[in-house]
Length: 361
Ligand code: APR
Ligand code: ZN
Ligand code: ZN
Image (cartoon, rainbow, N blue to C red; front, side):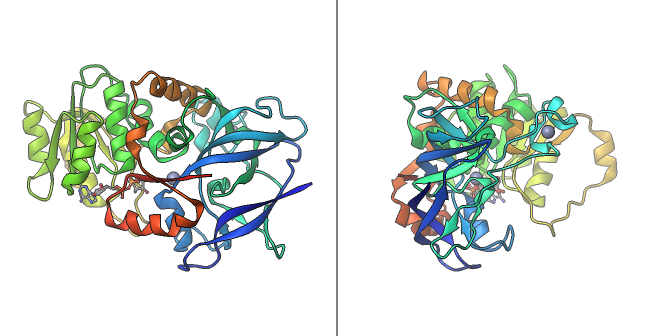
């Protein structure tokens, strides 16, 4: 059997997205058919549409999603029809060196659904990040589904599937933020704000939010920033030093992905501090630093991919914290929209006045 559902498709590089009827097959071995309930609009979706990620058009966009499993294929035991799940980028093997060392996002043998979803004329779709959840139903590998508490808001917890997990994980998993630490977060969009929220969860004493936009700083404050610095007006390195007794922050999280902000992070950390790069640079970017400054400072320079998360551990835990009122995921949901408003959400993203637009299905 197949399912005909409405979905958001990017047909060609740079062209506005369209809402189309697509065909989703019943799940085969190891696959799950998911009835999507909510899916956030992420920069990565826009990058796909602009051809910045690949040239495998048409893309089925959407990848920050939660929904209910409708059917599972042969051999699937971890999830069952009726389960409320958050989707992740790919199923990992669990057996390779990376998986065994708890770094599944570096897995050597990942997979997505093996069957293809198609346009009405039979053209195969490429699902964004192996998910494709701006669709009433999508087909994924069962290992991309993590069961969480069924009564949580899909719009809020779906965001854990990408940007919010990246930010929280950059602070907690990669940065190792702990009780009493001072943390600085450079760039307070969805990812940086999530790093702020994660730092608060971890018990950081000082959380310094840095951005060039006062509106972003206000949201960061709502999520737990104790201090804010507008780096258009104030040198952020000096400001962070001043706010940390002259030492620099124990953990600095770079959530922009640019050489100049990385340099700020590098110099704003305590001599034994940690820098976490979670912002995604472009291929042509270069970083120039005096090697002597690298030598003269201890600490660690790290990068965080998908927040170094383990979905089976982190998604249910963060949903629990959300339901207890200790993690304000609702603060990330600026607006809820319909499937045909994704293009409009891309426009708003450029203006910087939303953290996340979330499509409700
Ligand atoms: N200094 C400080 N903040 C800056 C600077 C700068 N020079 N330039 C931009 N910013 C701020 C923006 O004002 C915005 O608040 O960085 C933030 C970036 O946020 P978003 O554009 O909303 O992006 P977000 O979804 O948070 O992702 C941030 O992480 O996953 C990656 O690809 C993603 O590289 C991107 C980064
Ligand atoms: Zn994303
Ligand atoms: Zn593996």
